[in-house]
Structure formats: structure tokens, C-alpha cells
Amino acid sequence: MNAFFDMHVHSKFSIDGVSTMEDYCLIAEKSGIRAICFTEHVDFNSEEKNLSIVKDNRKQNFVVEDYFSELNRLREKYSSIILLSGIEFSEPNMFPDEFALYSSYPFDCITAGIHHCYNSVFPGAGNLSVSKAIHEYYQIMQKAIEFGGFQVMAHLDFPKLFFDKWIINNDVLDTILSTMINKNILLEVNTSSLNNPCDEPMPSYFIINRYVELGGNKIVIGSDAHSSDRLANHFKDVIPRLPNCIQIGYFREKEFIPVIIN
Ligand SMILES: [Zn+2]
Ligand SMILES: [Zn+2]
Image (cartoon, rainbow, N blue to C red; front, side, top):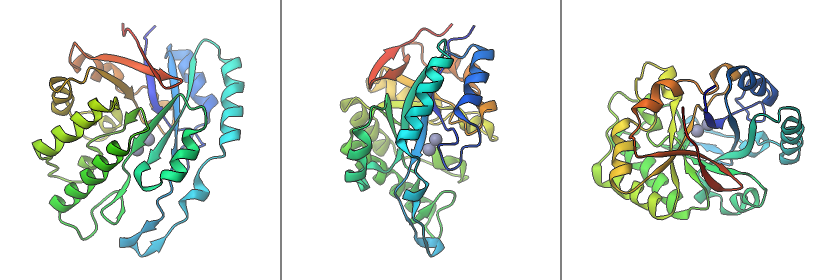
């Protein structure tokens, strides 16, 4: 049995999820995956300026009561798996009231993600230069981290999937990582980039190593699966390449719990 704890999974409660929560439980039961955190999208960003459209994303957000009712049903049925509740909230600093509302629900873990910038949504920077796009992305991320109130920052170099040259300035990187460490916001190691022709997780190993150099000592790992066949995908490849001193864990009731990976 492996002791994988997948802290970033989307079920059909997310607009782009294709598997039910129960689909994931069935896979976890078969493969011995110990824990799943259903981090469903919560997204209030509405303007896709470069595309000249205004979307009302809030209508796509899941019904929290239905989510907990299904999760509690599965917790009883699949008692050998640790089923954790969570959200992946886009740009929390831009939506303080909405973020406060979601924070009042009993989620085990709140993950923040930067998904909307460049005056548009990923992928692509619209008519911005790559350097401007990088600047804007990390400016939003820094503000989100300073705003705080969440446990984990998702996929720190996510836009590298969409650009040939994605270079982060060392000072910008250090400021982001140091602010995270000071505010006790954990770095996520997101393995979904390995589904693409990319041999690095998000963030890349040099950023994970820098996080450790600056004093970061805890991480969570997430597959960012949107279908159950991707649960804990690539964990086997990535975990042995992480710095030895780093503690992998999960969140329950917003408390970090370290785990031993076999
Ligand atoms: Zn995301
Ligand atoms: Zn995600």
C-alpha cells in the first residue's frame, strides 16, 4: 500500500470536473491511496476583457450544502479513506466578502489559485508581452498571499505551461516564498504538469529547493485531477525527487498533519 495523500482533486462539483466524488473513492480503494481532498473551484472573476465578454462565473460555483452532504455520505461508505473537504479559490484578495463567506464553512483546507490575469483567462497573455504577463501574474499572487487566510498556494508557476520562456525574477520569487513562509501558507507541489510534455511539477524543483533554503519545511502534493484516472498521478515520480528534509502532509480542520511516505 502506498501512503499517497492527494490534496488537490476536482470532482463534478467543479465546472470542469468529469468524475464524481465516488469515482475517486473507488479508485482510491483499489490503489490504496490514503486521502483525497476535494478542492472544488470557487471562482468569482467575471470579466474576460481580451475576449470582450463578461461571464458570470459565480453561477458555476457549486452548492456548498450539496457538496458536504455527498462528502459525508461517502465518508461513511468509504471509511478506510480519509476524505477531506476543500476549495480552490481564485484570486481571494479581489473578492474579500465572498472569500469570507466561503471561509466560514468547515473546509479542511483552503487553497488559493491565480487563474485570471493578463486581462483575460489562461491560456495565453492576449496582447501582453510575456515579461508583462509574468509581472502581472506574480503581482496578483503576491497580493493574494499578503491577503492570506488560506492554507496552500496552488501551482506557483502554472503559466509556464503556456509560454516557451517563463522566467521568474529571483527577487520576485524570494519575496513570494518568504511571505508565504512568514504567513504559514504552504507550497503545493502540483503534478498535473507532468501530464503535458513537461518533466517538472509545478513549481519546478529549483523553486521547491529555494523554498527550503528560505526556511520552508512543509508541503502538500496534489494531482489537480479533473478525472478519477488521474488521482495521485505522477506522485511516484515526483516524491523521490523532493528535498529530503521537507515534510509532506495534509490538512484536517486547517491543521497540518505530517505523513510518512513509504
Ligand atoms: Zn488551479
Ligand atoms: Zn485545480
